[in-house]
Length: 493
Image 1 (cartoon, rainbow, N blue to C red):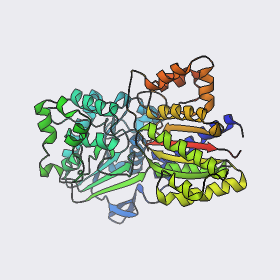
Image 2 (image 1 turned 90 degrees about the horizontal axis):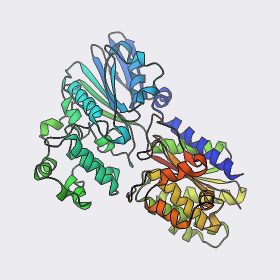
Image 3 (image 1 turned 30 degrees about the vertical axis):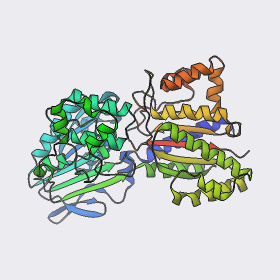
């Protein structure tokens, strides 16, 4: 198998994995959910996680925020038909392009769609959407049902700063945390403390509704409901690190004014967090589902797939080092210079996954078919310099360096991309990592210039200029978001 064929296969497998977690497909293929009303005598039922709920004499309202809610919300809106009273959605810029026929979702008793949060940063458009969503929630009465759709990107698309904070304060705090390398969990903890709608406050606003249903497409490791999109319908857990702790950890607390510090430290009144008695939350898609779809497609293409982990996190430099150690360990095992126990000691992924990994590795040795290693998660990057890039592109560049430096790994290749199609503040989803990336660059550049690119976090421009973007992954907004996927192809040689 040629390298170019492997690169094309990785693109193909990524596309298949993303398609598997596209919101419309999730609901179309799930037997557990059916929002098409079923009339039985005087009752009107919909199915939620295999349980039936009666909508007779009820009005259904829809709100949603995130990169993947448009497909979910519009399908459910259509399925509900006359039982849908419409609602409000907050989606990324150009989100409406995802709808082939927007006439059926815009207008009287229809969905009002706000586009905002350019480059995943809250703006006036998303602020207006958040105000409209909270206003609708507060209007709920005992004959109302509120259906809330949440996905990755929801935090930036639902900004409602707690006074005296204003939007620019929230943006500045979030931006500093991102550049400092804070995890998404830490960032969302601070977002909750700065917000009048997150951390269960949206559910509190809808407390008079007969039924509150939250549908979640998870983009956070471990699927913590209180942190996905900063948990607008789920109160934060007690005992976790506070927003103050997080801001102090990254030396940002003293940058805040005393009034903002007080606002962040002050919890909301208990009645603001009291949800309706009939309150249900369902996770319908995650990185695990995307990784499983990638494995299925890889197998169809002749690879031996193995899912290493769907909880990869930490600095991208550490993630790259773990992948390098894994690949070198595989080569050592194949060459019989590394024992099984040493292989296990070097395995940096969940212990319960090692047995499956060992099994496919033995199959690889016996059949000589190529391995296709899959991982998912959300690493972080500490930004230095004034370059342009994102964690997936930066990780691919680091892996390219490692594959180029290690002669034993020269035939391996790597792929990293965000399932939302947007990596950092760029129009790229990610990039391919290969020794050919570095070889090609060094034909007209020096190692010093390469080091400068890495130090400046300028992976986007690096890949854009190299071979007319041959190694770049450009998908545009995919309409979904379940964190990142990483692939490694290991041929037998």
